[in-house]
Image (tube, rainbow, N blue to C red; front, side, top):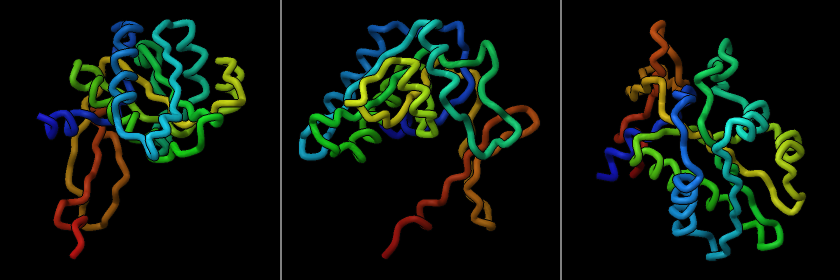
Length: 189
C-alpha cells in the first residue's frame, strides 16, 4: 500500500554499510524515476550511479549530514551508505528540473523502501568538489545526491508540539524523531 511505503520512507542517515546494493538495483530505481512525471516532458535529468566502496569514498566527503544535529558530523565507518545516486540536470536539454528532481528522488526512495532499503535526499552538497571527484562535465548541474543503504537507525514520526517546532532530533538511545504537523493544521479553507 502506498501509504505504508511513504511512512517507511524516512531520511535515514546511518546504514549497514556491509550490505551491498548491486548496480542493477540502482538501475531499477533510476528506471522508476525515468517513468515519473517531468515538467514539459523535457526529461532533463541524468544520473551517476555508485555502488562500489572506492567510488562511494569519492562522494561521501562532499555531503553534509543532518543540519539540525549540530554535534553529529555524519555516519561513522560501518554506517556509511552502500550506494549513491547523483541526480544531474542536463543544461543542453533545458532547465526545467526544479520539480523533476524531487519527483525523481521520491520515486527512487519509494522503490528503495519497497526493497527493504532506505535513503536520504541530500541537497547540502559541496558541488565543485564533487564535480572534480567524479569528473562531471560542466554541462550537468548537480541537483541532489541520494544516499542509499540498509537502514541502521530507527526513525519515529511524531506530532509537532504546541511550540510548533519541526526540527528533527535524536534521543539518548539514538532514535531519530521527526515531528510532523497534523493534517488539520495544513489543510486550509
